[in-house]
Amino acid sequence: MSVIKVPEADAAGWKCRACDAELEMLPVELEYLDSLFTVALPTCPQCGQVLIPENLALGKMNQVEHLLEDK
Amino acid sequence: MEQPLWERPVLRKAAGRTLRPGGFELTDRAANRMGLLPGWRVLDVGCGLGATVNRLRSRYGALAFGVEPSPGQLDAAQGAGLVRAQGHCLPFGPNSFHALFCECVLSLLPDAAQGLGEFHCVLRPGGFLALSDLCAPDADTAGNDCAARAVPLAETHGLVKAAGFEVLLLEDHSHRLRELAARLLFSSGENDVPCSCNRRGLGYYLMIAKKRG
Image (cartoon, rainbow over all chains, first blue to last red; front, side, top):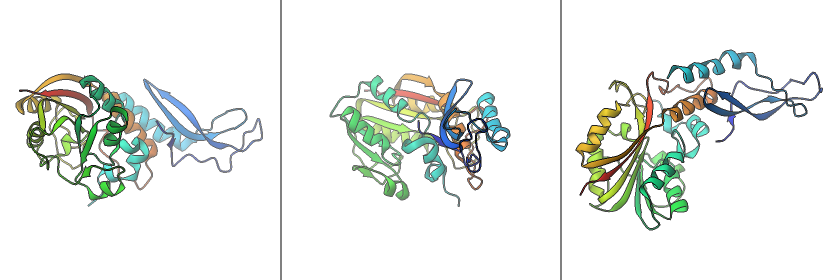
């Protein structure tokens, strides 16, 4: 399946503190229960550290978890 | 009137060109299970962008055709052999096809029983019906999108048998619907109208049936 682009996720203005590298939108695998999603998220191109913005974690990711659990 | 989900860009972003849960996995599963051979005449009802028609041609060597009522979808479709028509009123003679695919479309027909009667008519005796669609715990069909119009699987099963088919296979693929609903949720922006595919108890099935006679 193709990489999911989430409107709320944006790498602009973020730097990795450890590497001093600007974050880039790279595919990240998110696994929850038996489902796997490849989502573009702000990621350090050097060390691979991923930033999940707070509004995404508390918003859509939370809603997806509920959606997958509810059925 | 708002655009139906299957014509909105967000579905294409979330589901790809098949516009349905599971993509080609259930198409291939059905084709393999029925033993689809090169040269078979196959019809895809509600072919959308022509993805299944192209798949059946390129992967199985089928003489595949599609019908689709939406001019917008046909304009955006790829490939030949696509005809503008309603699924419950097919422009083909009796006994024309070896197999018929109806993927994520039956619940959208104005009259599912009439549609199944048409499918039965255009299939050859012994021809195969591959049906995948949403199902719901109750028949609360208020609304126009596929999720809102879903009916209980037992009801569909009864209609398929009443139309003159023998059901060969019935599988639950509800996890594929949940994954698509999640992809839609991830992909949707502030201005996207949410669909009702998070309706509680909604499921997804694959059924393969054979025309009796």
